[in-house]
Structures are given as C-alpha cells and as structure tokens.
Length: 243
Image 1 (cartoon, rainbow, N blue to C red):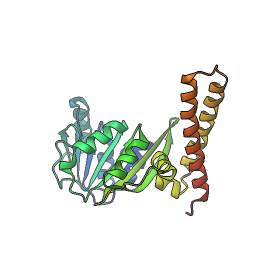
Image 2: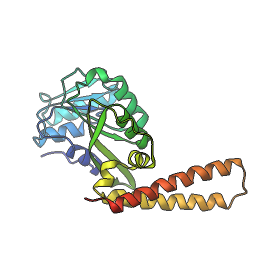
Image 3: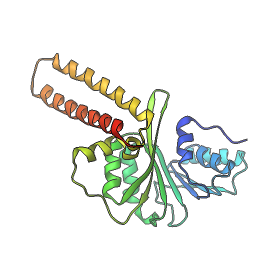
C-alpha cells in the first residue's frame, strides 16, 4: 500500500512527470520519492539532504518500504552532489525562497537544460519568480493549496535559452508576486488568498492612519498602499483572465 501524503506533498507529487527519474533536494523523510515509486509514477529517485539525521530517517523509511534498490540516498548541500543527467525532475521544496535561489545559482553544474524543476519556496515567492524569469527559466505550471491555515504556491519550471528581461511594469510585478499561471487559470485558492491579503492590508492601513503621522508611518503607509495596488491589479487580472 502506498504511503499517504499531506495535501502539500500530494500537490508537489502531482507535478512530477510520469517516467521521470527524480532528485529530491532536501528530502527530509523521503516521503515523495517513496510515494512516486510505489505508485509507479517514477522508476527511480535520489533522495538528497544536507543533514545526516534527516537522511538517515529517509534511508530507514525507504528500507521499510522495500525500495532501497530504486531510491538512493545521498548527502548533499543543495545540488552539489548531483551529477548532470542523473535526474529528469528536480524537486526543491519546503525551504525559504532565498535558499531556493541559492541552490539554483550554485547548482548550475548539475543542470543540462532538459530537466524540469518543481519548486515550492516557503517565502520570498515574488523574488523567486523574478529570479526564474531573469535567469532563463519559464514557468510551465503552478499549483496552490491551503493546508493547516497556510497557503502554499508551487511551480513547475523548465530552462530556456533566453531570459525575460522585461522592464518591471505593474503587470510584471503582479505576475512575479502572484503567479502568471495561477492568474491565467483563475485558480480558486489564489483568489481566496488575494481576498484575505486585501483584508489584511486594509486593516494595516486603518491602523497606520490612526497613529500620529511621522516619517516612519509615512514610509510604511506608502509600502502598504503599494502592496494594496498590486493586489487590486491581481484581482482585476484574475477576473478578466480568459481560461
């Protein structure tokens, strides 16, 4: 019987293409490669982690499921220990956006250009999308789920020969912040999140307006108003998207 995954891990697993060899960076317990092998979606995997403890746990889980011949474990700082051509899909999930970008920038040696990358940064989502856009990656698919009160955007990307160096217009800022594919396909969880973010921003605006005006308050109000405008632009684009 296949192991059961959380909603977040299930959504990530659903983005992996059938028949692909997987490299799971920061594998933790090794649940995704185990599930994908058990269900026949992938033939093999390399479960990688920087920590010896998590890797030992993953190794134990893999052995318990009788998958030691199909899933190898490897100690690795990001993509450091991955060789070019060893994987068709590279999964980098469950870590901060800054670390995701660091792993990608320091791991170019492992990328042949033909792999698909599945990314789920926990923070700095807009910066990650901007990094991808300006470093020769294209977002093919995006998913977003709500689990335990937290929203998790995730994406499948591929490498391209040219980078997107468009001027940072409002449209580009909206796509980086909220996801070009999520907006285009009118993802219901995205709309829910945008509406919640708008309520939060409006609350902050009211709180700031009630305080004595000073330079700090003025700067903060401008920042919040800018975010509010991006959210409103995203909602407008969401509603007018042609699915």
